[in-house]
Image 1 (spheres, protein in one colour):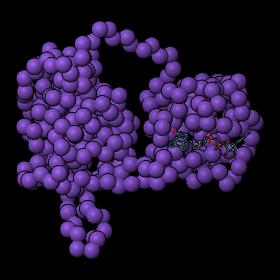
Image 2 (cartoon, rainbow, N blue to C red):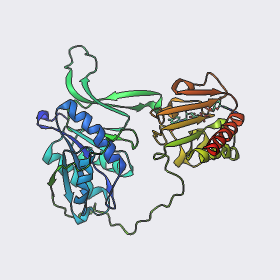
Image 3 (spheres, protein in one colour):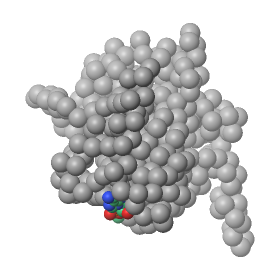
Image 4 (tube, helix red, strand yellow):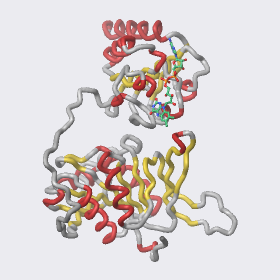
Length: 350
Ligand SMILES: Cc1cc2nc3c(=O)[nH]c(=O)nc-3n(C[C@H](O)[C@H](O)[C@H](O)COP(=O)(O)OP(=O)(O)OC[C@H]3O[C@@H](n4cnc5c(N)ncnc54)[C@H](O)[C@@H]3O)c2cc1C
């Protein structure tokens, strides 16, 4: 469908997901990215905050870069439900006409984003890993018009075997979901204030307003690897569930957390919450140890932005060494305990 008046659509909007009055980290990450995009488009970044009694969160959004915050506050929005939230966000888009709308690819965002994009008759690119402003088509094609200042949305395609860059030149807004951990938030600007705009499109419950009977919160006892500063990550080369003890010992002396490749999850050695990669978590620790991990593209996609990567592998041609800052070629069963011992002695000497 070709809509008229694309030029009416201005500004970069970010869905600021909150649950129980706590903002999700991805909201700040999207603001960080949104600010960059807004700069290139010479426009502002606006956070869309939807919930009940959530206005107090606007200052936090300002500190992470929001120029404006549109607040849709209504008792119907207390807990996430598809219908009232989709109505809220679609109404904001119809009223304020953003050119870009970013949503976190969380459980909520994956439900909300496509529902809203269908409602406002635009496209959505899911699970983007890179977002930038540029020309589309990227290289001129025949007599096809090349449009400028388009949102170029890059994501893995065909099961992660290639990457695709997608644009949405004929419809607005250009919508994308982005997985948590992929974009970087800015260092908060203390005391920053945003213009707060209250907007309520009115909520009339209908048969699509589901009734929530009960909310059961999952209790997890696995660590959140996305927050860890040091990750000691193991792959199939570790050999067994029991042998992960070597990695746990190393993690303990370093104050780090154990994570893993998908092969480890598939073998049932560690839970999926600890998996790094395209179908796992995207991590960005200060130090990432890749131990007995070959460095498949789907694994690397989740850890390549770590500050320092140290790989231990017995195969000197393993692709992990292409992304590693330091590489140790040898048997992890010898290297890891020796490293743990040396670090322990070092710490004891201090
Ligand atoms: C659609 C799709 C999505 C995927 N998503 C993910 C994902 O999110 N995360 C992910 O990790 N993978 C993912 N994969 C799987 C990925 O392609 C690889 O199969 C996987 O990462 C391999 O895990 P690994 O490196 O632990 O095992 P392997 O590739 O088997 O590598 C084991 C490594 O250990 C080394 N080694 C063995 N013994 C020792 C020893 N004693 N000392 C030192 N080194 C040793 C070997 O030399 C080898 O390099 C995905 C695949 C597909 C198709």
